[in-house]
Image (cartoon, rainbow, N blue to C red):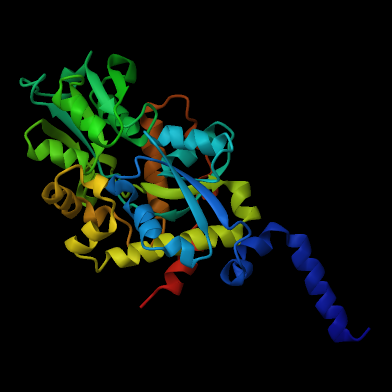
Length: 349
């Protein structure tokens, strides 16, 4: 055996011993075919702008272009979607980043690998019908607050706003109303006194005079005002083991999402209307587009998760959840930008 051959074998043994390090080097994820071509994604409220990049990747054929056959299951809220992944009936969750922190706090390791939204896009509105005399958040004590689903990101933001006013989650009643027509109906019929939800629902309620908005994270400025810094929102996340075992599949998913984000940067109103299903418009095209204009900057430009934003999320969660031990959370294990970075390079102009 010559010196070259001995050196070659030493390298092979070293990289084999490194195990997971080879997976994260990106070599296979850049060039290999997806390990799994059939992928099931669970999402809570697919018709909302919060998950518009997911819808675009599906409707524009970007998943198929990456060799994937993606099945998307839509649930009323993010917690139900998460349960589907935890229970094994879905591979990947399209949901709020902060779930990865909560899961780690419970001993379950999940990792986000491509960002869809760089602001939560969640607004809280008080009913002009049942609370016309509303003055401060403290007035919500004993009231019914509609959220997409209990335990969801909309619930989290409501908890945060309540805690800053000295209220606990137990001081109000949270009711799951979804993120579409059901939410509109619940507010307009007086079933709830306030609502924490996303667009287009919130803009439709606001412009029709059904609610008075008291907290708003649909813009970057609004997000910083509420959270004190950047706050990663919708993303694709999955069990950490799934990323290790299926790096090429995750790369293909990230490619499709980032390609959708890139398409959004030059898309006009008519392009959006042509691409999303008619049912997403909730019967009002003009208001749908007005909603889109309001949240456009909240969508990620490149799929990258801001590291500072993960710290913001942890701080926000710990501020009202006494069971979350912030000092025990390793944020580096809740996300990776490896896949999004490669996708960004692939689709750069």
